[in-house]
Image (cartoon, rainbow, N blue to C red; front, side, top):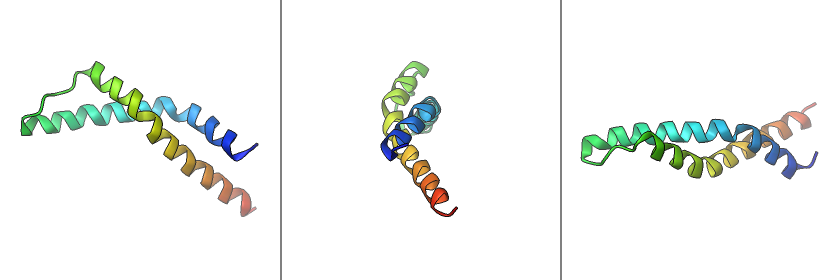
Length: 76
């Protein structure tokens, strides 16, 4: 399996988790920011942020996982 294909497979498998994690973090960050006068994101807005920002975050994580897999394969 080529490196690019491995990264895309890992990305496809982890994207739902990454998007969900980003959405939860965006929602809780907006709750913390409300103490400073900012408005709180609605859950739908937080999900949209998660869908948009989750892709680059998950891609970076997939590259990291692929590097760990490559390192483990080379040590065998």
